[in-house]
Image (cartoon, rainbow, N blue to C red; front, side, top):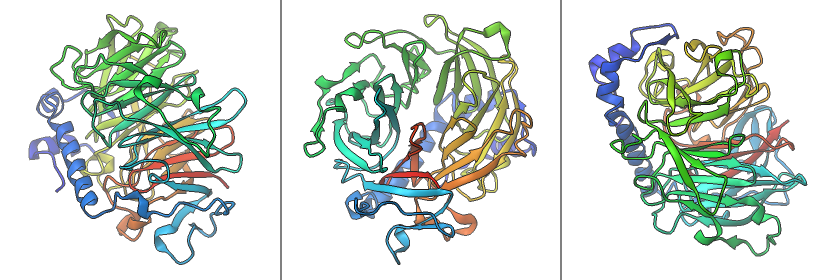
Length: 477
């Protein structure tokens, strides 16, 4: 059953029609967000939906046919990439993206499937490797020059933890940082350079001894992880419980000594952080040039932190916006000139509020030229119904995982000159979830399909990790 805000909260969130920044509603924040009620309800809603799908056998990834290595690639022709002729479950709506490979979670070594986060690494000699999160660990694969996934092995979940669909990954040099919502999991740090000499005929299942481990989280849980490669640290966000001294905020992990991972402090100033991006600041706000800044996506606000002093970080600004239902994730347009960012709200479509009321994913555009006074200047509305989840920026393009809607690529080059979003255009998409194509608006407002993607390979190959089926490799036509 869908969860809706109570009548008072709904009125507070939906009374304004135009997208704009606004002060946080402190009464609403205390009632729904700071208390944890909102996040717990969303997680329970997802868990109930996923449990029903497990019972139906939908999460059994062995039923999904991996793409044969004999198939070169499947072009997107007349709006479809037809992997299996005549089978609607393998006939994918698309525009401007061709399919190069699909491998089920089962064929990527998982006993449980259920995909989530992902990340990649390019070796010094140009080889491209992926870490693909699943409920029981992370699968490792190399992307061949022909765009094929070559399975190399896996790192199971930490031995003291149970499987969890929530598993997130980010990169640091040749390492990946892995967190999970499972109790006692902690943070695993694994060097993907270990994959360089593996024979694909003999995939390797690594053990806890092959990865560094940070055990300093309150209960071992984290919701997301981040890294600041330039400053040499990782972050665990949303580490429960909220009553801990760090209040589920940003917990910093020093990566300078992999044999002795320690935390120099945490940012508890604005409580729970769902996701974040931490960068050395370069941009128009001269007061903060050279400072270590984290952009926090904090349930009902964009919260900007100065974390230069990890033992005593501060909040620079805390700003909400019309339609805020659950501020989920976002990304700065240009890390070398931090003037704008895009933000996604995971629940505005589900809760039918603000610009997302009609059920089409909304990309909120922010002018952050003043870190103390960020402005929400406009938004882009997607063309098919669904829920937005994770997005990353590469050059002039935003790459978005919109659950059942699949991967969407937006040209965002117009934003600096027109931050209303009027010039933002979709240039490509690949719908990995044909099951909901015939619904009104072209999709369902449900937590299914793609969780994440990785768009940073020089080859142009893009990974799409999905909850139910497995991993896809696509490339611009």
